[in-house]
Structure formats: structure tokens, C-alpha cells
Length: 195
Length: 156
Image (cartoon, rainbow over all chains, first blue to last red; front, side, top):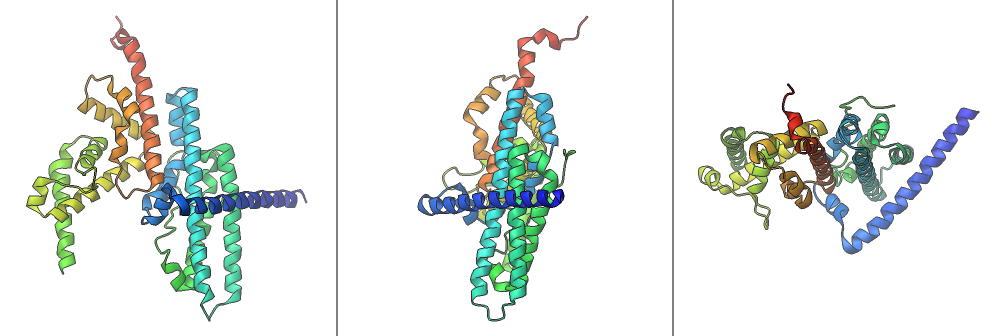
């Protein structure tokens, strides 16, 4: 019973964070459409494979340990804050790419006569799972910092890759637009990560 | 056929750049600064007179851009400890005895222009953040040595 309650609370928290993130992204999308920002440039430019490789550096604990040993506590705090902000932006960027991919799929699916409702439902469920898991990951990064979240990064990344494959299999034309998106590799820990 | 030839030409220019120029530059950070300096600040295009004559303007440009991305990628993906070593090597070989360099670099942040043009803003921010922290570590390492220079000499 208590496990079920815990899972329900976790899902609820994930959904709340997801709603917060979606609202934030929608708000940013509006601002970007009006004025243009760095993020818009990132989406407009070809997909940078380095972004996917960054996760290894962002989430490893080796750098944090090195800074802790060689820097003053003030500097170490600043480093932690910067890395947390970068890791959160990295996650937001991946969520944006998944959202873009899903939007493209929905657009392509509207004009597809061979649509299979069961497959679409499965895709919708995977999308929801991705939103919840990445929302929980966002919360953990924000609360505990990237090194402590390193073991959880792989799951939303796997889901994102699965979503890409599913959208491609269901409506091949829909995924062509976002073909370069989501070439994401799960982070390889360079150092020992804290659980 | 033409595309193949062009690819070969770029590859030849790249190998030439790596073997004749970059191999003689010590450390990836110095290589990065060198390659970034080959780029026009206004147009973002690379230019190397000797390479353009030897190969072609387009091949030289593409080879320089590819090497720049490659060196930048290596520095972005290395650990902070390795980056500190790279920076230390750069300072030792390019500005020996200049204790002011770290302060100037922290103020002016000249490494901002060393980022390749097609790099994403997130990667550029990550790189700048790492350089800033590496400079602070180097500064904190040098501070005790400057404050107590006699402590560096062996005790009798």
C-alpha cells in the first residue's frame, strides 16, 4: 500500500513538473517567436552532436570532486550552480526536441489513411512516460545536482530514442523532418557517481 | 566524381594542416587559439594563405573548420582536470612568467572567440563555464606561490 502511495506521489510530482515545464516552453516559444533568442538559434541550426555527448561531462562526479578538492567552498558552490543550470537546460533542450518530433508526427498522422489507433495509443503512452520521467529527472537535478542524477539520465534518453524510432515506424514521413534529432547517447560516467 | 575529388582535396589539406602545423603546436588549447585566429571575425570564414595556394581556397577553409571543430570537441569533452592541465601548458609555453595573464583572461574572456561558429549555445556555455573554473583553479594554485615565493625553494 505504502509503495503504491509512494509511486502515486512520484507520478503526481512528475506530472506537476511536466506541466510546469510545458508551460515554460510554451511561454518561451511565444517570446522567441517575437524577439528571437539563443535557444531559437539552437533549434534553427543543424543538430549539434556535441550536445548529446555533453551529458557525460555534465552528469559525471569526477569534475565535482576535482573542484571540491582544489577550490574554495565559494567557488565549488558556484561551479555546482553553473553545472545544475547547464544540466537543466540540456534536459529542456531534449524535451523540446521530443515535443517537436511529436508535433511533426501528429501533423503527418493527420493526413495518414493507414493510421493504427493501437500504435498511436502506445506512442501516446510512451510520450507520457517520457514527460513524467524527464520531469522527475528535472526535479532531482534541481534539488540534488547533476552528479546525483547521473544514474537516472539513461531512462528518459532511452525513451526519447524509442519515441523517435516509433514515430519513424508509424509514419515514416513524419520523422523525416526531425531526422537528425535525438541522436542521444546515454552518459558514460567518467567518475564514480553518487547514488 | 567531382564531390569525391573535393573530399579528397579537403582530406589532404586537413592531413597537411595536422602534420605540418598543428603537430608543432604544443597542447590542444594552443591549437584551438591558433585555429580560431585563422577565422575572419566579420565573416566567420577561415583563411590560410599557404594552404589556399597549395590546395584551394575552399579546401583550405573546410580543412581549417574541420580541425577547429575537432580540437574544440576534444577540449569540451575532456575532464576539468585535463582542461586545467591544458591551460597550464598553454600559459607555460605562451606566456612564461606572466602572472597577469590569468587576471586578464578572467576579465576579458578572450576564449569566447575560440568557439566554432556552428557550435550550439549550450555547448558554448559549457565550454566557457569550464574555462572560467579552470582559470580560477589555476589562479588559486598560483596565489600561494606568489605570496610566499621562498616556500617554493627546497628547505635546508
